[in-house]
Length: 388
Image (tube, rainbow, N blue to C red):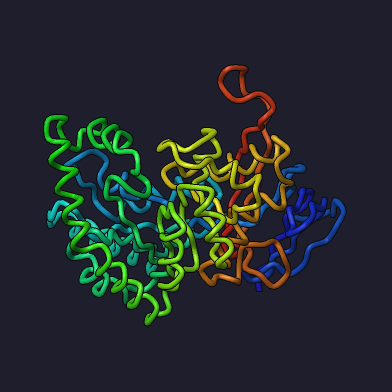
């Protein structure tokens, strides 16, 4: 039997903050005691939060393909990604693996295979800080999407599948100019080829999107994999996703879609960078607006690993919500969404996934918003083992 005591902490529980200590026994939270206590590791009054559960991060791709046309060794890439996540307080992550490509290039399929193989190896070898699972992001407008899903749907660790359609002219890219800025600005296509490229994508999507959306949803349901809809924008989108068995609405682009999703029992996920930046980079609905309307359940890092904790401390500093409720957006709620009910809260009997955070108020004026503290991660434990 192994025991660890973390004392003198502001412990963020489900509905309150208590000053006290946490006893960890064999990787599980055994007890929470109020007061300073006399033994154990002194957390010096820092916050003790449940470990973050990350449902949607595209960040692994940037480690495996750090520059266009440049691939990195997958296992070191996963470990570098893992270190960054742990440093941001994440103890469970569903790494996003994109399947389906609109270009017809074999490289996308090879990349997806390399990513899943590396994630599986790192998990089996127990050499990562966080626990790594898989989120299959299914680009339903791509011709071979459903066939690819059949190959990956039985991969160990797949805990979520999302139905995506990034065809310009609808959903995330209802504004064609936003799509132009992204594609041309990232150097993915020349300005002179943009219009023809858009027309080609729309023709391909018209032929394949609906078929693939239904096929992937059916396969996921058969295998017990939770389904998410991505970038729903209209009532019709939400009604379609509900009919397909979707439980999670990722990044709805309008307040109307978010409200419709919630009415139909879907959990609403928004990107934490949307909170930190003060709005959507694509001009879609602001996450803070959904929060104020009571239409937000989960925050994900999307493309900035440190953003969930930043978003939590920002909305609390702005008086939009209290700390326990904000922490639930990045721990309890995402864990529950994918059936990981053994974690996500600081409570006896749950896995000891914990994060020590200090609220830092000394950022220079002009370098950080006034009155918003910077969260400093000073310790991370997964299943009672210190990993950062």
